[in-house]
Amino acid sequence: MVLRKLTGVFSIALVLAAASAMAGVPDLQLSTATTAAAPGVTPVLYNLPNGLGATFAQARSTGGVVDATITLTVLDGGGVPVANFSAADMWLEKEVVAGTGNFVACAGGTTADLNTNASGVTTWAAPLRAGGWSTSRTIVVINGAALTSNAGLVLRHNSADINGDGVANLSDIPLFAADFQNVSEPFRSDLQFDGDVNLSDIPRLASGVGAACP
Ligand SMILES: [Ca+2]
Ligand SMILES: [Ca+2]
Image (tube, rainbow, N blue to C red; front, side):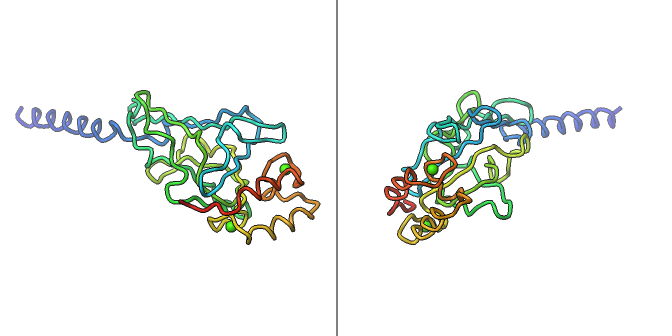
C-alpha cells in the first residue's frame, strides 16, 4: 500500500517535471516559419553590412518586387505560444551547400526584428546586416538549432560585398566587372535582381561601397 502510494507520487512528479521542462521552451518541430512570397516565387534579398540594404518587402524576383517578410511562430512542446522570447536568440543562416555562396552576417546581423509577441510571433522585415551571396535556402535558427518543421525557406541573398568579407569596397568591384562581361549572368552580381547583370545593377554597387559591419 505504501509502495503503491509512493509510486503514484513519483509518477505525478515525473509528469510535472516533463511539463515544466517543455513549457516555454521553443519546440523546433511545432514552431513554424514562412515567407510572404507566393509558392513558386524565388525572392532575392539585397543586403549590406551596414544595414542599409533592402527591407524584406523590397526583395525581388524575376517578376519584380516581391514581399519576402518572414513570420515565425514560436510554440513550446505543448503547442503553447512562447511570448517575449528574445529576438537575439532567433536568427537566420544560409543553408550550407557547397557552391551556393559566401553569405556572411555581421554579429547579430540577422536576428529577428522583435521579441515574440503574446501569440509567440515575430518577423524579419527590417534589412539584415550582412554581405556575400547565397543561392541555397535560408534557415531559421532558434537558440542555435534550426527549425525542423521545414527544410528552410526559399530566399536568396546578394550584396555589394560580393566577396563576402563583411565590407563593400573597391576589392569587390573587379568581381562585378568580370561578371558584367560574363554571358552566364552570375547571380552574385545581379544586385538589382532581374536575371541580368547590367547597367541597372551599378547604382547598388556604387552606393554600397564603404558599407561595413557596425
Ligand atoms: Ca567585400
Ligand atoms: Ca540586374
